[in-house]
Length: 214
Image (tube, rainbow, N blue to C red; front, side, top):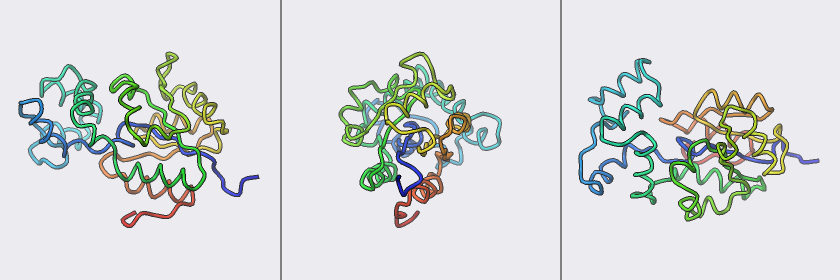
């Protein structure tokens, strides 16, 4: 029997593995040739972000309105443009480090995403070394489901060949965290504005060493 309480780490992509995007917008402006209004928590004049902070709009609604204001077809188009034009900025180094350290410690590592494949496409992820090393990559919508429906979580567990109760799952959406817990996973809610606490808790659960600032 394993001496560790878990056998696998499973992560959402958006706002968990992906790097914060506001710092990328100056670079994206240069590529697409137009100004982008708003820099979220880094911009005291971003009125949409202020609405989100006051609880008047959700995080997703912020991005929906941000994309419309800045001339994108929708929020998926905005993030697709970021991936297409700035692929080198896609991943959060701390998330990649967590994945690498878990793998080095003998854990299986997988990804479970609702929208990542629809936004960026499979070829995009095939070109990222950290995704080439995954033990499972599950597109929740490939079979007509989406988190928090239990089917994608159970499919991910099956592809990892690990019982749900021995998986630590990370997501930035409370509903998706709740969905993981309902199938028996241990779930960690990630704050996309500051992921350090969630990553530190995950490292503790997996008995991994903490990062220098974790």
